[in-house]
Image (cartoon, rainbow, N blue to C red; front, side, top):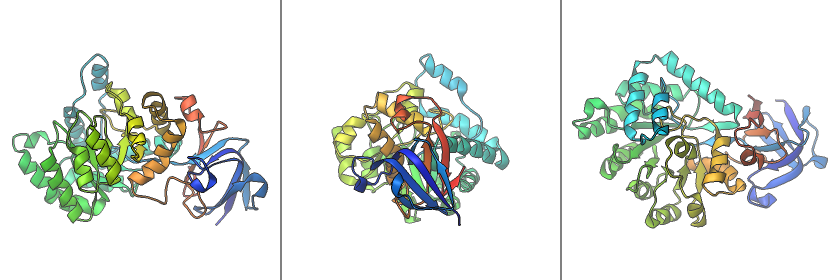
Amino acid sequence: MTSLLLTGIGSLVTNDPTHGGPLGELHDAALVIDGSKIAWIGQRQQAPAADAASDLGGRAVIPGFVDSHSHLVFAGDRAEEFAARMTGTPYSAGGILTTVAATRAATDEQLTANVSRLVTEMRRQGTTTVEIKSGYGLTVTDEARALRIAGQFTDETTYLGAHVVPADYADDPAAYVDLVTGPMLDAAAQYSKWIDVFVERGAFDADQGRAILQAGIARGLQPRVHANQLGEGPGVQLAAELGAASADHCTYLTDADVDALASSGVVAGLLPAIEFSTRSPYPNARRLLDAGVTVALATDCNPGSGYSSSMPFCIALAVREMHMTPAEALWSATAGGAASLRRPDLGHLTPGTQANLAVLDAPTYLHLAYRPAVPLITHTFTAGREI
């Protein structure tokens, strides 16, 4: 293995509280990567020797982004639907079926190439870990192949057969729930770490969602929930009841929902690119943070409600529209995403952890929100390898 010393770091965000402050930030810093791991972190003057060295010239270094919610296995796009929303057509879950038809018709090669393209986009923008859901197949064969394809790019795969009820089961949603919890789960479980359900009007109610999640839990999958996106509803309470890792969207919350998130430890996954693309109200991140809820930021990259692969864009939106501080937004996009995936080994830079990091063409992480839409990521390292 070859070691690499990165020196001349103007601002090093570690997310290690032992270094003080909310981000464990060090200035005039250096770090050593040895193979796939962080071997040393500290002040530049105290840096040990390494096999190779690179002076970053005062640039900032941050942990790689952990994108804990995405839908990358799909075909086609819904640009016309987006254009219609911009002229006043409201978003509804029904548009998912357009993508389902295109995805079913695509070849494995086409789907794999599209996931590869999007993951490459993410990596160029500093994302080093991404969760990928199924949910655009909605047949036994198509859900299994979506997860098999996703597994080529990440260990964080999520079975979302319960995205919506497909058209061929519109008159018998109970039969579709039986399929999702039976043969489809049998086919998908071997390729999945997580199970998710869209608990929302136009999708699944609380009883259906509970049955689906409990079936997945019985097969060793860990639960996640799409919750409270289009209005107040039972999604957050269901996530708390079943000990889900996350409740994602959280746009419309009652006081009881906020209390449930805080007391249960369920991470609130906020997805501001969706509100941007649908012209919906943004979640109240300040309310959640002040209540002690752990918040994650993620892209929810998908072809319908929000087709962005950019975590820096989400950080800028969170600061501008959701009243998070730049430090809170960066933490939520890194350590918060790791918490959502129950991955304590990710989202921070400390000796012995995987060397997942991004270099900014800026002296401080503040520029992520200060200079929105500017491509600031100059280098991304995943497991010590520059990509």
